[in-house]
Amino acid sequence: MKYLINGIEFTIVIVLLTLSIVTFNKINQVKLIETERLISSEFHLAIITDDVDSYAYDKFISGVDASIDEFGSIYEIYEVGELSLDDVIEMVIITEVDGVIFRLSDNALAIESIDKCKQVGIPVATVGNDAPESLRDFYIGTNKFNLGRHAANLAIKAIAGSGNIGIVLGSEYVDEKAIATNNFVNGIQDIVTKADGVSLTTIAYTKDVRAELLMDALLDMNEPIDVLICTDPVDVNRIIRVLVDRNRVGDLKIVASGDTPEILDGIQKNLITASIVEDYTELGALSVFYLNQVIEGERVSTYINVPFETIHQSNLGLE
Image (cartoon, rainbow, N blue to C red; front, side, top):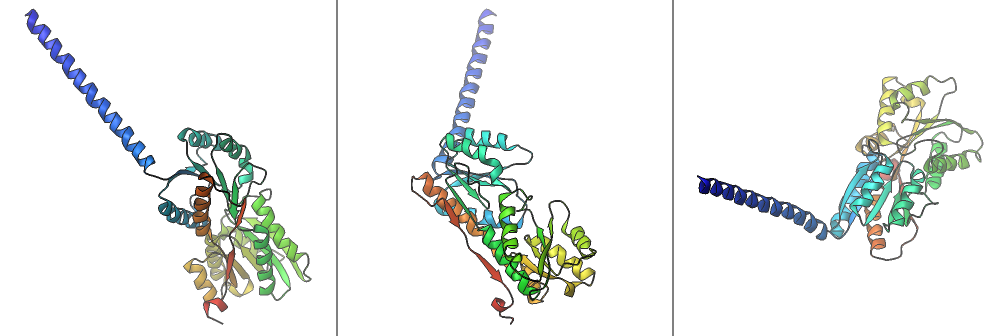
């Protein structure tokens, strides 16, 4: 009996040792797969953003995807929202990424986080709006002041140099304190204040009120708006629907943003005067391209401007 018990105990020990070895090998295989995945990629990048639902975001990510494939790199998206920016930065640093792209509604509010990344040796790019007082390696985006001046000129032309101008700011423009908002609005005011017969009477944000409700309120104002500058393509579509439903299409000119099929159709039907197109796809592609250069030790310009275009009936062949 004693020998039988000893034999059973010995068998149990052998089984446990075998299971331990198998489990250990499986864990090591998982680690090896993860290591090989990262080693096979040129660089591991992080994108920090608080916007993952907009037209601009979708275009931006399409550019990132194209450039990432070209460089053989990988990236992860860290959304600020449910997680705080501080939590995200801790995760990025622990992950030991090779570079970080900050694409926040107001990158200037992330100066401390940008500097924290730089202090541990992680290159940083700011996209869409700048944080010039930070240690970021470079900023890439559209010149918002010039964009505002151009939008104002289009608006004034649409109303033949006389009338009231309104602005509806979308998700990219968070509030009046943000640098991007300030520069865009200041660009519009720079033109309006020098022009006789026009006034900037309304600045509204669709982050606070849906575009349909906002448009209803604007149409009921005692002092009517003659032309509306809209910065978000989704807002434009909603505003056009309100104008059609209330039979007010001819009462208000629209200067839009973007090149969605709906906006192109609106220009063709003369519902929209013109549309300004920021190349968000190019922003995504170039942010990866230049960040790879910085990681490799190459020098790049600290400010990279991406031009914008204008769509109107003449360049659609309708005039």
